[in-house]
Length: 354
Ligand SMILES: *Cc1c(COP(=O)(O)O)cnc(C)c1O
Image (tube, rainbow, N blue to C red; front, top):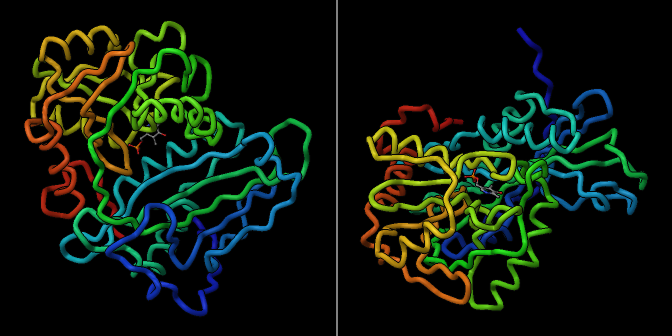
């Protein structure tokens, strides 16, 4: 028997749940009663605790604020049709958090700290998991540097936290995207494969410019030639061209999405033709012009599938087929929901029960 680290629990004096209108929850602004915290003291993860959700006290010299040594995860808990709380593929998020941490020179987190912290937090705040169709409890685990030192080096100390937000029926409008051919999200040898805070700060300016031009988000291209598709916004991107599902292979410029992996797994299970390979922008544009681009969508935890309705490239906009005609992505969206809600068999053990 391995000793599990004890978690000290301080309950909120009063739950805030009665203040929340669950029929109208703005994404990411409503926080559940508690949060999980653990500290890395330079040698070990210690001081595991659950406390009421509250602000942090930080030194102005906190190194994460200055140099961005900070990584995060995003996943969801659901109520299945039997009313049980389930989490979708949390161990995959745990492993990815540690891969991100390694790239950012941060100490790995033991699986036990992540999973026990998560499970205890969800047990305590299980009332916060909404049960309406397409609703969920969004879970945000993250690690950040806590040395109070403004020299540039890896911090000796860190904090790991998890907090959660109920999210309403996330209906994502079909999006208009622009293929970005100047700015880059990630470069070879860079940090694009890590869910590292700074990547998202760097994407804001190009995204804002695209929004000013009337697009919702960008399709990123490779930083060397800008001729190959990488991701869309903060999602992986997939296309159906001539009846084949095509997506960019994983590399150090691509975030290894868990939704991406789930979609590819289901497609292969169904015998759908799948190609993980580089996709030239010119191939997508030619297919759009010739009416062979049947579907385009982003994949990620927030929306699961974000349909792309229009693609802008070099001052031209290309309209894609109506959402209702998109057989593959509509089928995969439903199949994933059915697995999460317990209405379909969970062949790959993706659903983790509390
Ligand atoms: C988080 C993220 C994704 C999607 O990952 P999921 O595990 O499917 O949520 C894709 N691309 C980027 C850049 C991301 O940050």
